[in-house]
Length: 113
Length: 107
Image (cartoon, rainbow over all chains, first blue to last red; front, side, top):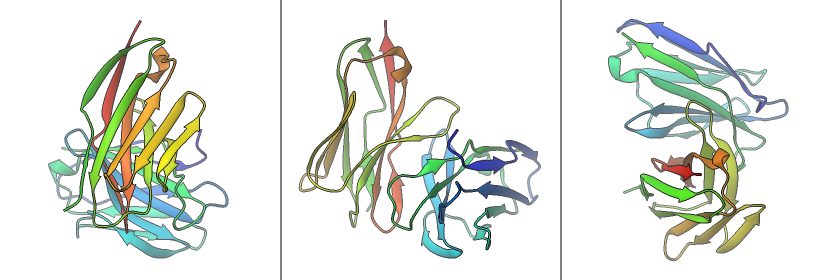
């Protein structure tokens, strides 16, 4: 158990819908990272927050957005969902902004039908 | 462009040694990571290299050559539980992961 929690564990929704994925980092960690993992693309970095501020941006679509709240939990919002958005979404946390050791949560498996 | 290459699959025998290579071409470099990921589970951190050379941690070692854009992960005394995917990742201003190497261990 990494200490990072993600909810929900599974999510099934229809195309065009909007969903919110939630992540609580390990106690004391200030950074939260979001990743998307699909079979053909591997693990793709989406976005990083550090202490409430956006720190780095990866291949995040405009239909996706995220934020980190004052209590340091983070939410990833996915809208206008497409079939291709079906994937495993991981959240990871780390102590500092540039910290190298990230602790991954168990992931949320999103299925868009 | 940004590119990280690692073999798709490798097979080794229990008790043996295996080396998983990773080559990268990125616009910047602030460190290279190796993660282990069992099927259906989250990645777990194995190692981090920012300077050239070998870092040893128990049965696992990781090597980096920044001038060659090359790293390898060495696994010794292989155990069946080492069957997993091994992900190489490079950090410049963001984090880029390779597609992973699926390692199969034969008894």
